[in-house]
Amino acid sequence: MARLMLRMKVSMILTGVFFTLYFGLQPVTEWFERKDLVAAPEEVVFVNTSVCHVSGQWKPTGFYSSIEPVNKLRCRMPQLLIAITQDGSNFLEAKRISEDLSCKYWLKSGHTHIHSGQYTAYGHFDLKRGATRKIKIGTGEQIVRIRCLDKFKASKYHDVLYFFSPPDPKLMSTESPEKLSVMVLGIDSVSHMHFVRYFPLVKAFLENHPHTKFFGYSRVGLDANANLVPFLGGESSRVAGSDFLSNDKAWLWDSFKIEGYSTAYGEDNAKGILSSRNGDKELPKIPVDFDLTPVIVEMNNHTRYSIDLKEMIHCTAGRKFQDVLRDFVLQLVPYMQGIPFFSVFWQSQGVQEYYEYAWHLDHSYMTLLKKLLDADILNNTLLLLMSDHGLRAGEYRMSLQGMKEESQPLMVAIYPEWLKRKYPLAVGNLESNAHSLITPYDLRETLADVIALGQLKDANIEVSMKRLQTHPPNRLPRGISLFLPIPDHRTCDLAHIPSLFCFCRELTELPTDDGLVLRSSRFMVESINQLIKPFGQCRQLKLEMVLLAYFLDFGEESFVYELRLRVRTSPGNGVYEATVRLSDVLLLTSPISRVSHYLGQSPCIGDPDLQIFCFCI
Image 1 (tube, rainbow, N blue to C red):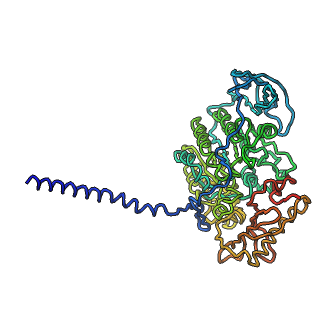
Image 2: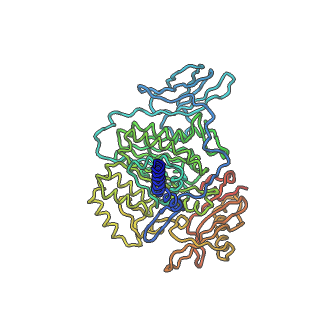
Image 3: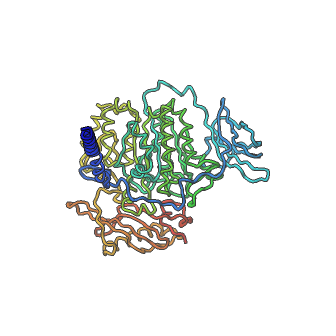
C-alpha cells in the first residue's frame, strides 16, 4: 500500500512537472519561434508623401574604411598649461611639469583679424620640475601662443590658448523679454542612418527630451559650404558669390544681433567652410561676438601636428582640434545662461575621411549635451543637431546605400517642453514634418520665426497656414518654416533639390555600354574639361569607364528623361557622378560630384570647387 501511494505521488509530481514545463515554456518557445520574424531585415522610412517615398536599411553590411585604428588615435604631446581667468586677470597655470623648461609666449588681441601676424606683446617664464605655477599675462580677450624648450633646446610644448572677458553683470538680465536661444551643433559628413548606427548614447539622451528627427532632410549642394550658406545666408552659395559672403547683413547672425542676441561661431577646421569659393581670397570676418576662427588659424599655422596616416586629424599639444571646439562651447555657457544666444559650432575633422570615426564621437557629444542640460541651457534653447551631407567619398559611398545616404544628412531639433505647451500648433506642425521633404532653405525660414517668437501663437500660425495654401501647387516658396505643415505635394524640383540629390524617383539600372549612356558620359567628362580648361596646370580628362548608369523615372505623364551616371576618368582614376537630361541637346541637371578621394592630386590649384577635377601636370 505504501509503495502504491509513493508511486502515485511520484506520478503526480512528474505529471505536474511535465505540464509546468510544457505550458510554462510554451510562451518562451513561441518567442524563439517568432524571433526570426523580428530579426528580418528592417527598413526605415525617410520621406512618405503622396509624391515621394524614400526608405533605407537600418543596418547595412558591416564596413570599415580605414587601414588604421582611428578610434584609438591620441595626441602624442603633453598638455602642460591651461588658461584661467581670476579676478579679471588672465593666467597660464602649469600642470604635470616633469623637467625644467624655458618658455616664451606671444600675445594677440582676441579681436585680431584671422590672418594677422601681428603680436601685441612678448614674454618668457621658466617652469621648474614638480612645481605648480600661475603666470599672469594680461587681461581681457587674448590669444596666446606658448613654446617651451628643455635644457637641450628641444621643443617640449607648443600650444595656443585663449581668454574671454568675464560676463558683464549689467548685461546678464534675468528678466529679459521671452526669447528662445538657438544653437547649431554640426557634425560634417554624417547621414541620418550613420547617426543611428554610431551614436547610441546620444540617441538614448534624446529619448528623454522633446525632439523631432527630420528623416526627410536633404542636401541642396555638394559640400558643407553649399549647404550651410543657404541655411545661414539664405542664398545658394553659387548665386551668393564673394560679394554676398563679405556682406555682414546677409548672415543670420546679423538678424539675431539686431534682436538683442549674443552670437558665436566655431569650427575645428582652419580652412573655413563659410569662406568664399575663390581659393585666392582670405576668409571673411564672421560678424559674431565670440569667434573661435582666429584661435584655430593660429594653431593651424604654428602648433598643428597630425596623428593619422591621411593627416586629416590634427592636434595642438595634448588636444585634438575637435576637443578645442567642444571646450569653446563649454566656455560660453556662463554667457548663455544670462542672455539669449545664437551660436553655430561645426566639426569636420575625422568624420569626413573615416566612416567608423563617428563611433569615437558618441560619448563626447552625449557628455556635451548633458553638461548643457545641467547648466539649464537646453531649457531655453532650440538646438539643431545636424550635418550637411553623408559620407561623400570612399568605398561605402560607392554602394547604393552609401549613395542614398550621402543626400540624407542628420537633422534633429531639440527644444524645451514649455515651447510645445505655449505654441501647440506651431510645434505640432514641426513634429508632423518629420517625414516631409525639407532643406536648408526651410531651416532659414524656421529660425526667422524663432527671432519673432510671438509669431508662433496659434492665431498667427493659422493665418500663415492659410496663406501657404493660397500658393499655386507648382509655385511653392523655396523655403517654408517648419512651424508650418510642408505641403504633401512638394517635390524635389519645388524644394530646389537638384536631381543628383533626389531619391524620390525610382532608379532603373541600365547597361553601361548603351549608346545613350556612353554619349551622356562623354558629355559629362567634356563638361569637366570645360571647367578646368582655363587652368593650364590641370590635365584634360578622358573617359576611362562608365561604372554605373540609372534611368530616373519621372512618371508616365512626364516627357523628361534623365540619366544618373558614375564614370571613371584618367589620369588620376577620378570617379564622378552627375545627372544628364536627354533632349535635343544634352544638359547637366546637377553639380558634378567626385566620389573618390583626390588627396595630393591637385596642389596646383586653390579653388575648392575645381580641386576635385584637377590632376596637376
